[in-house]
Amino acid sequence: MGAWDDWIGRQETRTDVLTPGLAARFTATLDRPEPDTLPQGLHWALCLPDAPTAGLGTDGHPLRDDSPASFLPPVPLPRRMWASSEVQFLAPLTMGDHVRRVSTIETITEKSGSSGQLVFVDVSHQTHAADRLLIAERQTIVYRAASTEVPAPRPTDMTPDLGAWDWHRTVTPAEPLLFRYSALTFNSHRIHYDRPYAVEVERYRGLVVHGPLMATLLLDLAARALGDNRLTHFAFRGQSPAFAGEPLYLVGKQDGTTLTLAALGSDGRVVMSAEAQI
Image (cartoon, rainbow, N blue to C red; front, side, top):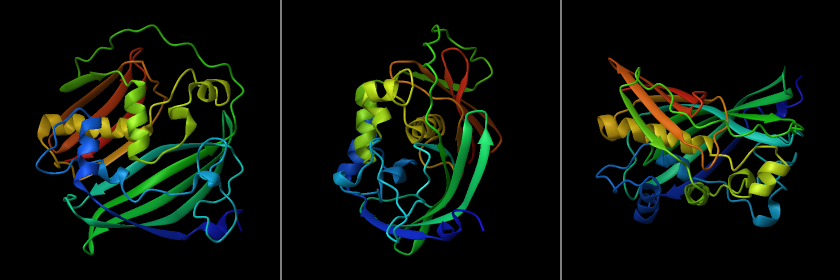
């Protein structure tokens, strides 16, 4: 038996209501007028973990233990990241929806990488409204050891070659954007708002842009090009951290019903890769 077998199949159910206030704050964060239909990616601001402040660890995430009430396994590795997601958009969210999300731990896998031990946790999220399944997502969370490396310096700002892409948009995530997205998603992970902690403890060179925020910006890029709620499938994978104050080049291209999307750093590195279907 594996160390985490007792967590396989563990479930939790959370409920929420999609209010006009939430929708307005979400679109304002993206600098978009509130659309007639609600944008894809809004589900990441619903059915949020609501651990009390006293139940947070030093990194700002909820503490993990082996109690029956704990959903995620008590992996002892201190660093947690949202590595990737694969999302099926089956029907759009609508204003006033009473939302129910059922989350299930599907697999837990231990691996060794160049940075040491890694533990991957795959979680299925099923988002319903009025007994209809609206969104099905498989999320991968990765836990890793603390870094002892000196943060890499900021690369020289350049404009990557965008000639191969049909659409592109440049965004420089600033601290207020990160703060607003943390507030929308009730995310108190300190790497997104506490620069001394991010640099001195977790060894990043600055405040880290949320993975789902970058994914939301890619969904927004597709919506600006094709219209809202056009995607039926969206999969993304984080490949490199992005930092506040550094330009992000959001790019996309279409081949029939298939979209290829990415967020690029100013040095041309792929920060996030994504694929979608319309």
